[in-house]
Length: 158
Image 1 (cartoon, rainbow, N blue to C red):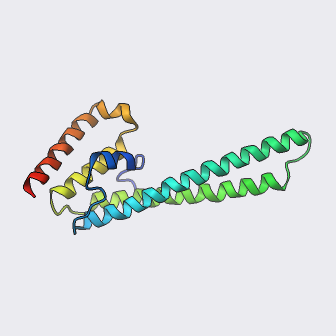
Image 2: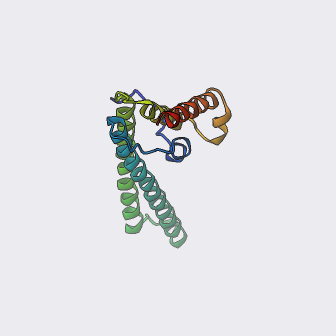
């Protein structure tokens, strides 16, 4: 499964913006996969926050140890902060892999209708756009328009 998406994780913010029905609420396999992906993206975001906090604590502990006695080896506090950072970073990396695998699973699941195709296209866009400026660049602006058309057709047909 790995390697199909290969790029960055889909952005939850972009998914929310592009696809109002995200995560899928229909009774399709793609919709069920989108719920799993949504949960994984939320857990991943929390893991990144935990890594950031652990890194800040480690930097503060190092600065404190250096200020207290710059010639002395760093003590227990720095070691425990380093271990906490490493544990949180390892968890974040596991969640990276899991989230990518879930995105690939969603993209590999056969679509049951236009909503599923729109959802899959939104995941590709959300993974490919590096940031807001990219939304207006080729091919993202065109892909966004195609997605909007799919969503409009899906709404009109409902």
